[in-house]
Length: 207
Length: 207
Image (tube, rainbow over all chains, first blue to last red):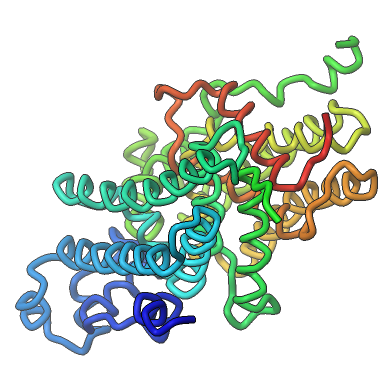
């Protein structure tokens, strides 16, 4: 790996604990346990060791906590995906591997955020819901464009590139519903296996 | 199709409105909108046009409504899957096609139930949670055993049959998160495309 690649590569595979502001971390834990509608601002303040007015000082409503949380989640996923794809170079097969691996790792290490992202779209105010869906569409478009480039190069041969792109994204996203970091399946091994399955799903006819 | 096949086949592809008892239909609508913890028994009684004591007469708790709903959902999915596979005959490729099509149709036509099934496992009492997970495991085992049989016959060639089985199931389940029956993609066309992608994902090397 050259020095330049290392810089571009920096960090998209690194996951420690999520670096969320205390109110958002508290909101995440509460929403994951009880759902948005089952959670009160008082619950969140108590979990964050803040008074209700202290919490409102930073986040004026429960809705702003949900939006703040989902915005940070999607921004993180998109930024990691873009870094992963940029570091992979120009070959569609490599770019595909990068975006799939990035989706997989994110959904292994950010399971709670992913869960809120897929379950509480119903609870978003209309104004922000459109912005959130635009983020998700951007992520899907990244996958779709790489598959299209791979079709153009003759690397991928599926008859249904757009459907395969959605199928691949959803199978990566679904990892968040069953993967346990403490379980028997090592993260790198999961990436290796799912990457093969994802390549098969787009009809990869390479080496 | 012979008469015998028609009998075995009966109904697994047929979906009208879900035939739920009024309290469960009301619980489904409320949970889908507000989540289990955000819903009160009073909400459900009002939606079902019942008094709270009237509702309790049939379902003694909010938990029993959730359990009743998920039990009917999984029983329906399992029964349809078994009928679909039985009607498909002995060839693993046909059986695989049947179970994939059944998963797809269920998750197109029973989106709300599927949503509650994947989001409110957290809200189940421990005793029933184990039974529910056993149902899901049984569904996954059906897929896994068909893939194993197809590997043994040389129809499927994936290096990772068990992981491919999970990937295929989750990509079918995820259809519930985005499919719109009123949208541009016809149900039969979706089945055709996803079936091809699912075959590719297990390394089908057939005609």
